[in-house]
Length: 333
Image 1 (cartoon, rainbow, N blue to C red):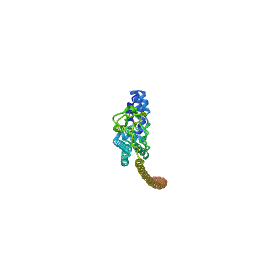
Image 2: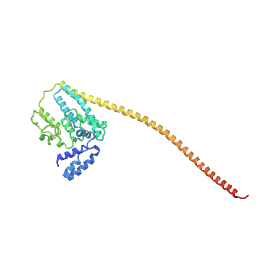
Image 3: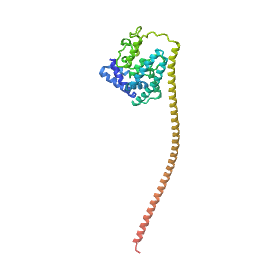
Image 4: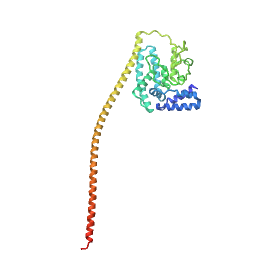
């Protein structure tokens, strides 16, 4: 079974609407049996259905890859500023990240709606969390841009993001740094983010291959960093402060958005409640009017029946009177 062929099938599946994934996966597995055998078909069947947030990120990667490339570039700049303990640059880049994340989230909502799905508040939060993780870790950036993301990513404040079981067919994913022998998987050359990551790693290692114990295969290759002077406590605190300020402002903005959503929902609930009460009152009036009309109809029906009987009786009386008159006229005096 070829991993590259499996990756091609997976890429096609993860571009589809979320609701149709399971049926499409079954059809792809069935086709794989005829084309390549049961081993590939079994592998296709094990491809996990993405979460709603992962699907939304995949739609960005497929339909609007530009914003994800901007996030990856900004993340590389932020990591460089943090390594250099440049608090001023880190604070500026953090502000830029907030602005860019807001823009990318608007794009994500637009793309999702174009694909027939509106992002709920909870899903949008997970999408933003995943995009933020892509600015923290080169491997996370590659995973986000792969279009085969299956779950949400999360950054815990360090420079590593847990990528286990985060991407379908990770073996053929472009790695951000490190030679193929170190990553344990082939590196494709069609990912600009991978090239940028490789160049950055080369600068950190002085252009030499990493030494020491090789880490298990991962989306992010690990190299040996050049020794750096021990930073002062003030510099470390300044770098952490910039990151904390960014997180605090993001949390405050999220709180404001949630408060606005709550106020809008409460206003809608009040308006609809008033409308419902008005409709119930009107319905009661209509029911009373209907009952009155029903009674009038029954009364009118009874009166109509009496009138019809009276009319019939009158016609019979008229017929008898006419017959009597005719008899009298025909009788000789």
